[in-house]
Length: 126
Image 1 (cartoon, rainbow, N blue to C red):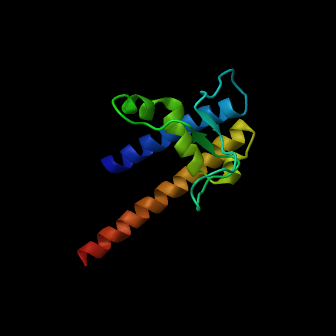
Image 2 (tube, rainbow, N blue to C red):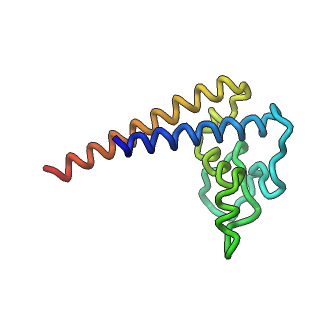
């Protein structure tokens, strides 16, 4: 039960963060992305990448003593959550539609994860 409550809290936190980032990206609020985040331009050293035109990339990597500060900063932390959303969701311009669709997606993902964990627990017991 406490695990479900923690997952629910994490889901709400991620949803609120994603909605705020969406408002920044679609210019609904007067806040800019930090200079270290940019739209993916198609250039990548890796052969396989999940990045697309609606992905954000960072030109700084956390390292050294200040890495926790960067990793925990809003934009750095949330850009990777944003990139993990399906592109169809990231392309929704309307805030309310985006929020509703992302909330449904996050719930489906959470339920699938909980069912997967439940099934693996059953397999251990047998």
